[in-house]
Length: 611
Image 1 (spheres, helix red, strand yellow):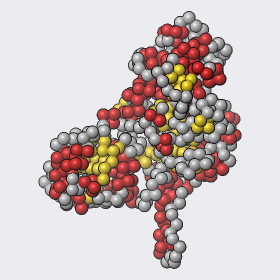
Image 2 (cartoon, helix red, strand yellow):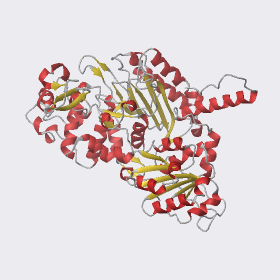
Image 3 (tube, rainbow, N blue to C red):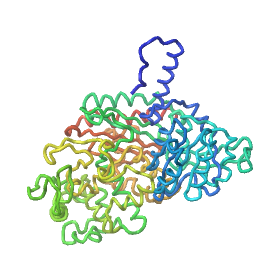
Image 4 (tube, rainbow, N blue to C red):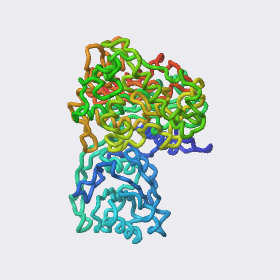
């Protein structure tokens, strides 16, 4: 992942020095979380860009953007060579439709028509295009119909051409990559704005004009911006490469967020050992058991604080079918703490009869388990759920980790909210947070190339699992279960965890009460280290789980596919590791090599040098 070497030929000393500088900058940018961009800017330029970015016309406090679930955003750029970078940064926060305005300069009415499905347009332009009367007319026409954010990068004297525009304007005199990197963050609240105009440009834009904003969402920064050093994170590379070389996983993504800033986000390896597709920082992974906290538990948290879910109530209060079973009197709290006595799992796929599935879909076989594999429509209700209801309680009152616990929690939650859990968590969390990739059944929304393949299943589905949940039981439940089924990229998972780290607050909205977050994430039982749904640091320090250096406040979860997410409130730290360690087949090398914990240790070592 190095810059392309220059063609053979003579290079003078100045060119050699320049090449070295570009390489150093590129590597620094990788550590900053933009491993796929190869931006040509440095830390000093970023700081200068921040100090020069002025926000105008924000009387209505439109910036930072709020209520993302109501926004359909298009980005239109005119004559800006860093448009790909700008649009990629916007896409970190929300789904973005992009248009190159230059291709419409002779047909801006056509562009206006093409934007009919979008209610917020971000228009980026420079000196050349703001001097064109047809572009100014286009902006004025749009302003009468839609919400706009103008991102003008150029000569302040041209601000007068926007005197009639009342919508927010971001202005910088610098039309460069650094501004392309920070302007989207400013729009969404990933960084604060405080700069003022240094001179008067028109009756509308006068000296000392400029609105200040606060940071409301995660931002992207160099470690140095937080007083850390990029070089102190270099050992992560060696550990990740070791995992790939020893075939613990074909590839991985590592993300580190500190103090609300993503300071490290890097992709390693490839999608598969045979693939030519390099792993990317925005690739979508099967999160496996992280589903337990990122979907089921956050839903339970909201319902509990609303008084709709009583943790001390018996399961029978919520699931009628349990009332004549041994599950009737189990407390909801014990289900979430894995001490209800459930068997660890049931291998549902092993009992599958031939007439239960088909290789083609029809009215009787509608549950898609994988490509060319369809399960009987009512198989979950008529077979799997009955098996779970009839299963023995083998260890009541003891801690035994069980996937069945979250099957039951899903049923409880769906009974309360009267809708499927994917739609409930999307409406109440994911859509509002801007988590575009955090979904169940990602093949319904994303191209295969955006999703990382998992196992070559040669014993059940007889195919490569690519965008279908790895867990067999979750797949047989239609890809949606309380314990597995959720997919996401690293950034979206980090945003959800940042909301929890913020005690339920994110993007100017309170998703959960602080006391709810504390209740669920703190240790809740003398029988185990666990919180309600959340895993926590093991008090037995000899286990070094999840890291020797993690504080006792640490909470998170691991996933069978080779994933983990850990949040340490004491250090304001989020660590995410995503991999497809089960490819091509399940192996334990990731565990045996202790890859996830060793990387976690290196992160603590890096931040401890300034803490």
